[in-house]
Image (cartoon, rainbow, N blue to C red):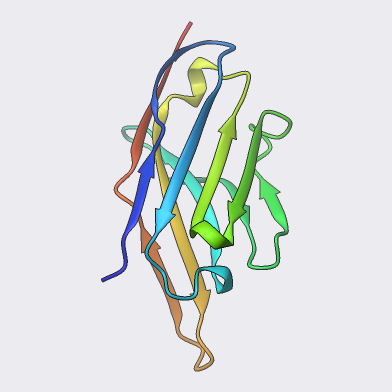
Length: 120
């Protein structure tokens, strides 16, 4: 059974930093696109950052220049470095792994989420 386990969330003051990790029990981790999403009560889950299997990255405009996504294929782990945090970054952060099989089926897995709270 595939598991994605996030860690590294917590409470921090505005301007502070956190580093989130997501360890994935995927046999072919390097073939997956990995993403970090976040969600607050009453709002839809939104994409924060993603990294393709080839290492290309993409960021939401609201976090560009402050957050950095990276991955270590040898450790089956994706990271999200959060710098210069703002109160509006407060959310549950979720890790996602996705790929399209050779048959065209989309496979997607989610972690359980980790809470990030930023106080002003």
